[in-house]
Image (cartoon, rainbow, N blue to C red; front, side, top):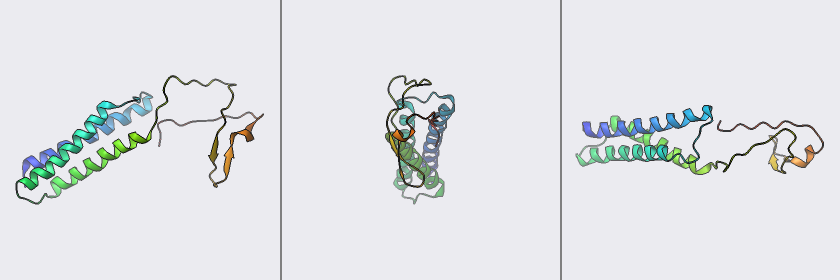
Length: 136
C-alpha cells in the first residue's frame, strides 16, 4: 500500500471536514456568507486530493485499499454533496427587515396534510409567522 496515496486521501478528507465544520459553525452565529468561495475551494481541493490518492495508488500498480478508498469516498461524497447543496440555496440580497404590523405578502403553500394553503385565509386575523433560517 502506498503511503503517499493514503496521505493524499486522508488530507482530502481532512480538508472536506474542515470546510464543512467551518461553514456549519457560521449558522448559529448568523454569519453565513452569501458566497462561501473559500469553503467551495476547500471542498474542491479535498475532493481533488481524494481522487489523486486513488490515482496514485493505481499508478503504483496496486489496488487501492480501504485506507485509501474509505477517506477518498467520504471526501468525494461530502465535498461534491456540499457544492450541490450550495447550488440549491438562494441568499436574499440586501437587508430584509420585517416590522410588527407590516402587511403579509401573498403566498401559497402545502399544509402537512397536502391541502393547499393560501395566505388570504389569514386576512383580518392576528398571526405570528416564524421562520427558521439556516436550520435543517
